[in-house]
Amino acid sequence: MSKIKNILGVSASLAKAGFKLRNEGSYIGIFWYLLEPLLMFMILLGLQRIINAEIPSYPLYLLLGLIMFNFFSNSTSQAINVISGKVKFIKSMKIPQEALVISALLQTTFSHIFEIILLGVFMTYYGSSFLGMLFYPLIFIFLFIFSLGISLILATLGVFITDMNNVWRVLTRLLWFATPIFYTVKETGLTKVMAFNPLYYFITAGRDFVIYQRFDMIFFIYLALISMASLILGLWIFERYKNKFAEAV
Amino acid sequence: MERIKANRVSKKFNIRIKRKGILGRLLFLLSDEKEENMEIEVLKEISISVNSGEILGLIGRNGSGKSTLLRVLAGIYQADSGEIKMNGEPVYLAGLNNGLEDKLTMRENIFLVSSLLGLGQKDIKQKFDEIVAFSELKDYLDVKLSKFSSGMISRLAFSISVFCVSHKNPDILLLDEVFSSGGDKRFQEKSLKKMEELIKGGAAVILVSHDLDLIQKYCNRCILIEKGIMKKEGLPKEVTKYYLDSLK
Image (cartoon, rainbow over all chains, first blue to last red):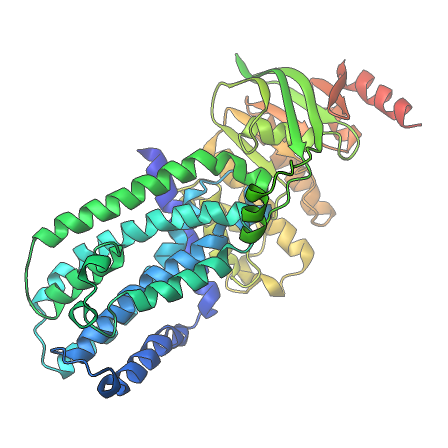
């Protein structure tokens, strides 16, 4: 138990330092976090007529899909280098290596919070109810655990495969199009294929609760199962290989 | 009480291991060619034992395996064969500048590095003033480290490491070339005294150093390692003399 506490403490310190390093101490740096999703949002919104999507509350549907996917792709792509990029560090200090992965996710969580605030602004603008927002933290915890599992796997692969970040960049790009972010599953007729895309469940749950106030509690069972499976697999792989990291990097 | 026990510990490194790209790895799986093993034995059946209150010196030329042995004992590397029994939680220090971030302020660095050394937030707050006072850098608390001189950085690094380690009151201390603080003469004397306090505090200590005077002054026993083999073990005076003669 005290070991877990230590890991979380180190993760938080590393995340705090990383956040400060990225923003050089100024909070204006947060603006840059928001710029990318905001631009993407506006471009896709402008393309709405071409896509011909008739989706209720389309702007909110789009924005929430974008920022949830962003959390997953940003945290996982950062995780690839957290071990392999810190050679000197892990050879000369005995720190819990899980903390390096968790701190990457915590940093992405900071920016995710700002993106959610941005969503809140748009929800106010469109007069949407905030009731469903109460469930979002729970959905996010599952998304966090799911991303943590994948990140642990990627951090391990990143130690042994030099160009893992290139591979993952291509894969996340494919996943971006394979996830209903700017379209609906109905339009594609690929409902069965979508059942294999874990992110589909997270994003759909997020939208159903936050935007449409459809409180279908069965979602939480799906999310719990998917995120736990990911975490268990991730931990299993990471713990198995972590003793070899210091030598392999 | 026996704190550190290593029995016939060996360690090999495969220096041919290249971190390959994914295509290289896949092609390699498909082809029949066998990867050539180029293993070098860095440690060969090393056996040591250190009791609490004892200070063991490790000497030897560069690349002889001293640091590898400490890393194996600390659990950073895994031994290939042999047995290691550590009776207590080891604290491993290799160099003092680890974890410091140039672009963070001194205050932020103290929190970061202390946390990496395993202290909780409460403990850090408690130790903070002592660290700052010892480093004598109070006026620079909110200055980024990139503006520090190298002497100032050494002073800060030394203060953080020593106070954090002594706060943990470890049973086992593994120190790799951390004795010299690198500050000015007066600070060096002060830090030497502090370090003395730390290693004489009753822990089982292994000290890796090229400073033979230091080894003679502080160690109860000394081991000479040469190409991964324990060449000689005995009183510091004898072993250092043997080592110096062998260099001629």
